[in-house]
Length: 242
Image (cartoon, rainbow, N blue to C red; front, side, top):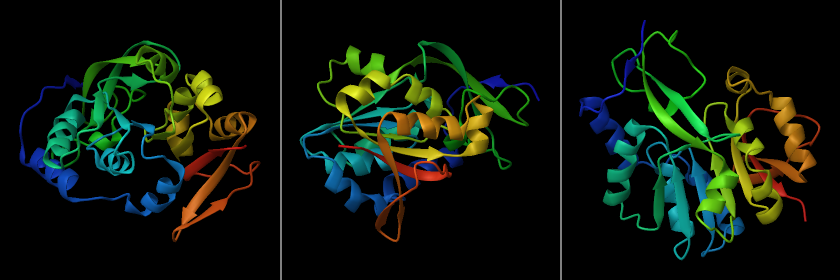
């Protein structure tokens, strides 16, 4: 089915997405752990902010700091911005770009679910027009290193990324930031999504180990170190070695 270009139109699905973004907090289990890692005046970056639930959590952890909510999807931002306003989130800056390994322009593809809702949590720049049903929009792409430099940031304390397999490209474009500021990283790693984006979970895992990061997983509120030579999928928290 040929793709159509994205055009915002209010719908019942959009109202549902907005309601969930305002009323739900699906990531609360991370709050105690991240509170120990991120200072109240820290600078944190939410890559793939979607509807803003994680952005809101981070904003509460840095009341004297800054959250960069990086979200290229026009539909996601139509949920994110009013949700931030409704919840009184005032220390977050929305960045309407995608982050990758080099600057440029890409087409963002957002699947349409069977009932007609936008699957904006699955939007990616790897899928093509072969999707059963989707919409596309051109988006600007930059690297994390270039974004940090352009904004003149003097610190980066934490980066969360949920970008449907483009975590490998993100890290490739963030080497200077990782080495200079040593932020903690929370990455959603899915081998099939990484492969779709032309990356490999083993290579990404090895790259972060070389950068002196230690992988951890969170289960029942307990943060557990993982073997650095045994890649595994999931939400992996990478902490810089001293």
